[in-house]
Image 1 (spheres, helix red, strand yellow):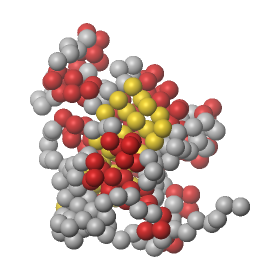
Image 2 (cartoon, rainbow, N blue to C red):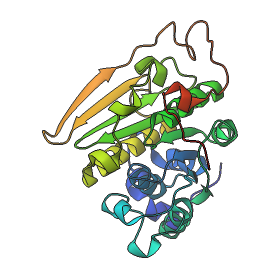
Image 3 (cartoon, rainbow, N blue to C red):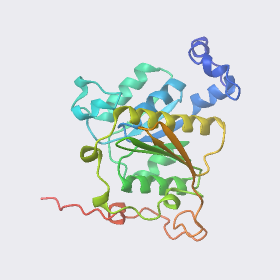
Length: 272
């Protein structure tokens, strides 16, 4: 077991004195690997807190570039970053913030073609995506690869954080067996999102991830936290495993990636 350096003891002192963490737990974090899907409103604060905590390897999957409208809530980015790949900018910021951390940028979409390869190399996955096809794909792959999943979502003034154990039981499909119709799910551009809300939910995702990596508190066994930002109220919902779930149920029928956009009723216009 590798010793902490004097600089690391100073940097992580407030962790090391915590019951349940100590030097052993901090070393565990430094050896841990977390994959973040999406470097947006949720992924940015989650990544910052993981890097601050000393999570040794952080992978970030995002094929998008920074836009001016992102700056209201995506706190890793600055005006001079507009037009640059989010994953690359995140790597620069996080590694400058904490040299103990290695950040691996994947400037690509998280798709059925690459998802299993990406997830397999990490201990835990944080889903900060903003669309249902990616959320179903992330959940399915985490079940098949036996990885815990922490997912989040924000809409206007409300946010959600969900945690699912390795291998599912329950999984995201137990919570939402069928996606809502696409025309009933406006995106941030259409509906808006309160900037600080993304920070609350992203920080909670980091909190749940760190607890899972350290084995602290209640295990991620299907909890859903719903936050009403206007009333400043949290609601806790227990998500039960569905024996008929096609992915983590008693008799799985979905054992490999499917066409998730078709499953969610999204029709893509043909390319010219």
